Image (cartoon, rainbow, N blue to C red; front, side):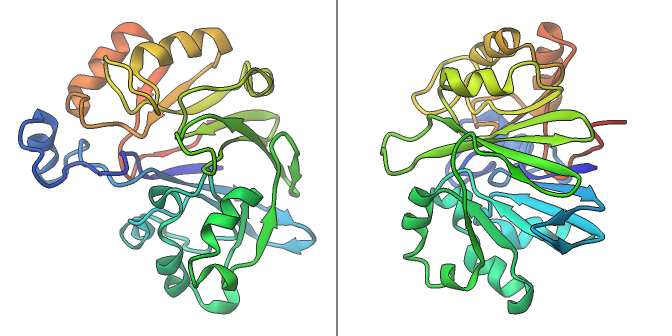
Length: 270
């Protein structure tokens, strides 16, 4: 199994217009900079999977379809996307459906897995009806051939219509958490994901807390509380230092927490 981080930034991306006061923006404009970040999204490759009886030699999962999907998909060598799991209905998580439609042959459109509230937001998109849809619910497991996925509730948006999910992947006897947009994890969700082998977590804020996302001090407490073995931080915001300095700062606090960057690939079980 391989995880490719297609985007690791906030909804506004880094760099962005008129962000000159932020040092990280200057660094992000340099060629090849790991501080340049598109909207957050990840691609999970699971070898030899099947879904609901349909056989695939290489089952691939896309988490969130950002507005940057056209650029992001160039990072995927095997562009066959079998399933899309949406965390919520904000445009940085689901605003790329139209682009994904045109990037795939209509007959090969992936099944979109999300909860009913998110679906009700997205039906306004004229392309939504073309995608196969599978309704999911928090804490109800979805079984595939070689892995399973359990959605779990997190709290992120001010608007209660924008209910948000994280996902627990159970693969090869290991447990991987993906939660790219959250401020609070409810107790029942914490019970589910505690002691996970790998956690990919929202850390939009650097030092100071913000209302809808995690900050680094909050993440340190959460990682200790839930005993995650290894952690990668995504949704990295504009207040963070540039990548190299940020990773040094993180390493002083924990040897098991790492900062992601766009195009990063990891094989979590190697």
